[in-house]
Length: 263
Image (tube, rainbow, N blue to C red):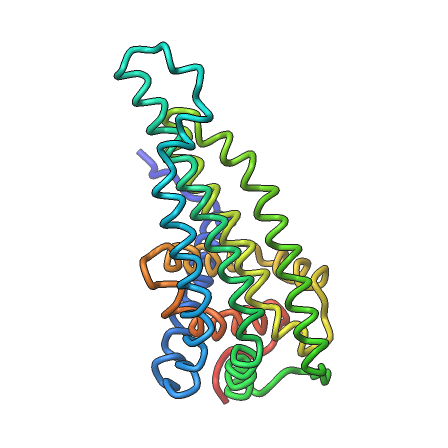
């Protein structure tokens, strides 16, 4: 009997996905080796994180009421089925709330801490030879770019989040397939958001950023989903935000065909 062979394209995609995950690990390594600068990136993350933890705690507190509000059809069901319907609804709210919280946390933190994260990204670039063609971007122009891009990506996260929330009410599918799709969508949006600084440094805007990342989608998803999962861990988003910025700089360099090995 001949063993089934996995197509080379599938193997290559899996390898690139793992390579994208490895970029976050390399970002963490850079974080550990440059604690002085990287710790500056924790300050804006702490400020934003406190607000988002309070918001998500509020969602957890009212989730039972929200679940009851959207499942009036279950009022006359038996207690067991009614409870099951509302548990499914509650999990859907918490899951999509987590997706929106992670994406919006990243967007807001990058705007609040723009000077810190720009500095982290620049230092990583210097370790690998700098950008191939750097464009001087004034501070306020950089801040406007960051804020505008963040608003667009938050809008996209809401756009994707609504159908995922609806799908989350479907038993089994809502608790298995939807979380994976949510991580993929959230990971993609995070990757697009986090590479903003190195792309802006080269005079490249959001459409070019998306196009470059789409050219190597498995690597982008590997990186973005790894960041997304880490950001779901309590305090993970706060502590790993600088490392995510460092890893995203490597992702940007790789997507643009620039060296990602130290000289």
